[in-house]
Length: 72
Image (cartoon, rainbow, N blue to C red; front, side):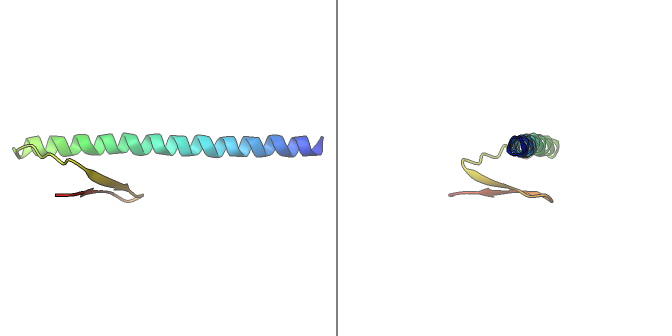
């Protein structure tokens, strides 16, 4: 019975960690969409012609979002 209790507790902890990671990934994606919308609004506001980036790498940290264009 003791091993079963340990197994149940371990399963609950792993489930909570998995749910936390899924929620964090969802929030990062949501924040990235908000970031993209803000950039689009600013480009329209200052009348800049549209910019096309064919390939880019996006780095999301706790403090900022960095977009680095790849290729040329």
